Image (tube, rainbow over all chains, first blue to last red; front, side):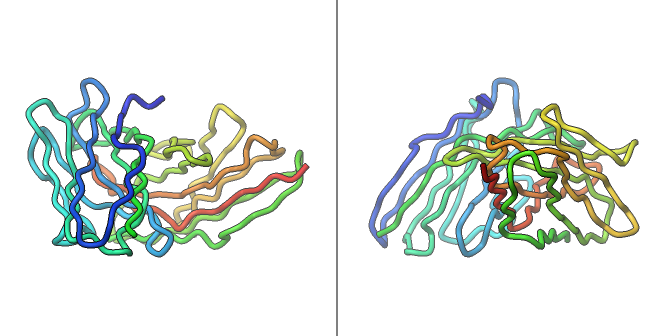
Length: 114
Length: 114
């Protein structure tokens, strides 16, 4: 158990819908990362937050957005869902930002868009 | 920008045989190097990492990887595999000196046969 929790574990929804994925980092970790794992694209970095502020952006679609709240949990919002958004979405957390700190991964949320 | 190439998508090997999973990377800056393992229906776990110092790094369960700067490689080896090593293995890099996002390879499915 990495200490990173993600809810829900599974999500099935229809095209055009909007969903919210939630991540709680390990106790004391200030940085949160979101990754998408799909058959087509592999494991891709989406976005990083540090202590409530966006720090880095990867291949995140405009239909997707994220935020980190004062209690440090993070939410990834996916809207106007398409079949191709079906994937495993991982959250990871690390202690800080600015030097190397190990990223601990959550178990993931499996999103199926039908 | 960085990129990671894992040349073998599937590696079947018999139990107690040696195995090597290959990883090459490309980067315009210095990087940290990682191997992550993903067991079925689970999240990613850090197997081992190279940050600095000795170019040979080892994990607690018998895996080792060697950083070769001239060949830009970070191959993963184990002298004798077990059935329980069956999993998907991901090589990853991140920019040195920062707690930034990981760039992953496409993964290698290691299947250990009895």
